[in-house]
Length: 291
Length: 238
Ligand SMILES: Nc1ncnc2c1ncn2[C@@H]1O[C@H](COP(=O)(O)OP(=O)(O)OP(=O)(O)O)[C@@H](O)[C@H]1O
Ligand SMILES: [Mg+2]
Image (cartoon, rainbow over all chains, first blue to last red; front, side, top):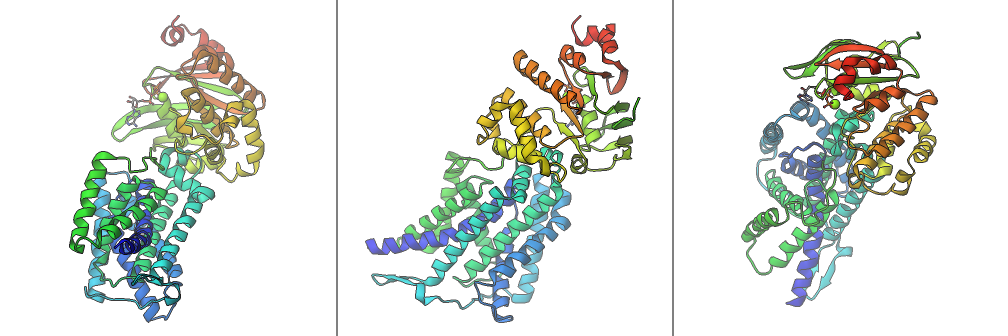
């Protein structure tokens, strides 16, 4: 029993790191431009299907596929920003919700037409890295996916805190009008930030798809988890999102042996409400990039 | 008189349907300190926002170094050396002092001078050097104002425009900041001040414009404006 729990905890932390990465995509966009990105889930699903295409049609190594997916996600995000989001930035929150929701519906619609809603999976295994304990095995794929999630999150953190572009992004998040006065082309910074947020979500989709089967609708589930994670970590805070992701994964892992999976969302959203009420600024309660 | 460095011609502007400026013309001469005076709500901040491109100029012209820059965005004007220390400081509160100063030097023209400007700014405001790893939002009001001015200087401005330098500052710190401005002016910097503290501002400035209800009420060499009975009564409590 004790060892079951150890395995569940490890399992939870590993999956949680990926939840964290996905949530960073959501929280970055919110932190910089105050937009709640409702195409987050669809983007995760696009990442999953991009992995499917790149491994089956192109024959790429699944882990190498992350690179083109990140680049493609970035370009796609920048385009979506200019076409659908920029015009409604600064108007009511409802407008930006509707704009991103509309893109979400387009992606899901086209995706359903192309791939239907039946499940796909990508064959990945890294048996050399698997860890066995007392009849329970942590698959190597989970370890690789978690490590990659942490690496990507760390790279993003480095970008935000140690590069000129990153400082411009944080300045825009902090005070867009002042950033403009510093000579920063804030429209481009917004577009680039949106592109990065979308790229990160798509990258998280790739990592998830190396672990579990998926459909074009799978993203919705992870979008909801991202919301929980973002609230756990404090809105707009990428470091908090990573920690929040790990906490959520841990909770899922620890409860998994005891309750049926259908209870998972109930537990998650009960937690969501409790945190919103008790810690409205997030568990860490330090703020990043907010006015 | 030499050519104006920054020229506003008949500027009309405002917010959405609210017209605030009704045709204001201002000329800022190089290496001079120009003061903009006016009651609360007269439109001083609005005029600066229109000049800098933060809000749209409805009609009229903004000329900088002889070139028409009316339609340029704020970031493009900043890139040319037109620098504003905005009302209410507008610091990057969640970022450190050092990062605020780095962002001040964001433009291509300021970047090569980063080290020299940083040293200059730290000489004027040693306090900022001691606190350079501290978040700007945790500063006191006076320290924030120092940082706001310092951030403006980091941009290697051709024209430095300061909106309400002394608002909320102690008389001592106000004196000190004015001392700094006097040094900068002697170094040949072109300055524009919007200031409540008319005694200090007019003593230091060369030329003044008086704005009332979105229109120019009067203008002239600072000494004359300081002696204008209207201005003395309305703004200097005399
Ligand atoms: N962001 C805004 N939106 C709408 N109206 C505004 C805005 N900012 C200022 N105004 C209005 O424009 C007019 C001029 O304001 P402005 O801030 O330019 O005055 P000011 O001369 O700078 O005053 P103060 O000395 O108090 O700073 C005021 O009537 C004000 O209510
Ligand atoms: Mg003002």
